[in-house]
Amino acid sequence: MAMTMMAAALTLAIVTQDQAALRAASKDSAQQQAVLWQGDSLEIRGEKQDFLQVYDYRRERGGYIRAAQVRKVSLEAADAPELLSVVRFLRDTPGAESLGISYAAAYLKAAPASSITAEPFDALGAMADRLARRASAKQGKQGDTVIAAHLEAVAHYGVNIRSFEREGRMQLCYDGDAFRRVLAMVSAQPQQRAAAALGLTRQECVDPALGPGARVALDEWRAQVLERVDLKELPGHVKNRVHMRRAMVWSSVAFERARKGQSFSDAGQRALDELGMVEPSELTEDDAGAYAEAGV
Image (cartoon, rainbow, N blue to C red; front, side, top):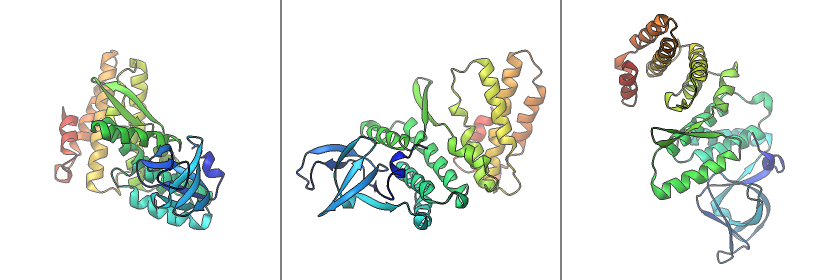
């Protein structure tokens, strides 16, 4: 992750409010240098009255910001647990993804490498994925402005959100780097692995412009990712999600094989078997639509 500015300072200011003003002097009437958004990280260079003197490496601008609009963050190893606590709080908070990702990046910088588990990557992936979903939905003019600013903020931490056109609208998807890190860690818990596998294999994140060969390779890779999920210790509703995703992926594999004139019966049967293992009583309201789609 690109965290150059974080490497340069042991104390940062993380912006907690959208549309915070970076001003030329320590007063509200001073010229506005830039508009800052939640999740932006600033190097602290001094304090004056109710303002912090800061430098914004992303925009290459210095100035002053009201202290109430930021939180001071220490990157000392001793303070890493406190940063992780904030990440836990923000992980499932809609609308706070860019702020949560900034805290996750700060934690990964502060914590000793030997103490880092899969948890911060699991949280980072969940927040990046949710931000991409929000960006794909119509938010209205003001909402779109906020989302665009948040996407720029998280890109500074190395979070890559790709986009392509699907059915006449733009689809945005997280590239899944944090999820891949979770799957590569021996210490990852079963639910973390399941969440990572589901995050990496979303059907709506398959680019429709892929050629037949690339689509086959992608579907087979998605099937392998899902195959490595151990279902034994997962709660029923998460098992259902894995079974449904496997069914959709194997159905796609069968379709591509049939289109190429290859044998597809095994893949088709695997899709039916996975769908048959779904427990309807464990379906959540949100999963009912996916279940119906998987059965088509």
